[in-house]
Image (cartoon, rainbow, N blue to C red; front, side, top):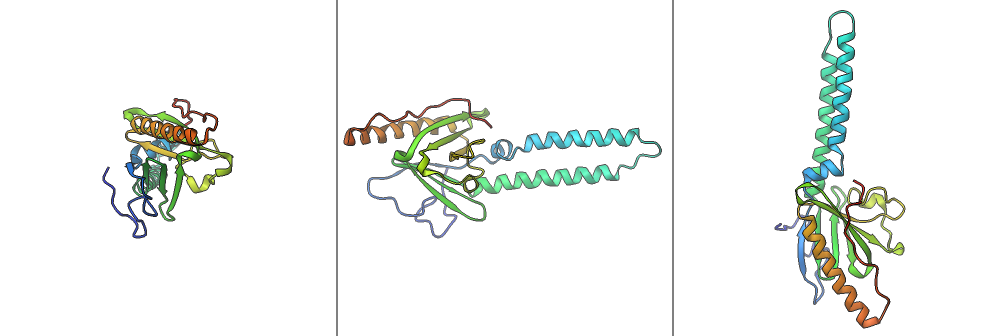
Length: 216
């Protein structure tokens, strides 16, 4: 993905300041907006619910005595379509305003449609990670932080792991090449922690792992 400047204050696309000596960008990417609409904004589930409600309304209209008045049904259908359109549009804007950056030292998340936030997540502050794959090679990469590094759930949404409210986990959502990025992140994390271990002789860190048990 070719990154471009979205904000004049950025030293480089997705980065609030210039990289220090020895640090370099290895990968940048953003969510696939269609996958984000399905898995983060639940457009598919909501659409099925709307279809069910329209079917129930249609059955009630056909069971009623006298001529069938379809105007309320069409009004409801139009409102449902508008709601789905707004959700899909929000997913598109969210994906367009997001840029994830992977360097040899950290993960950087630039997120936010109206209020832009940038989170720097050094590998030494990442306790673990988990990959949830989707169809077509897409996937979520959730990053578990240490308790003292807690980030507010509302600040991360929708770039957070579902159902982890007390200790939110920043998540790279719906990456088109989720498995490849996850493997690259694993190797970089191991290299960083191995160097840290050799220099400080600390205990071995909790390993980064990949599994398919993340909730949608």
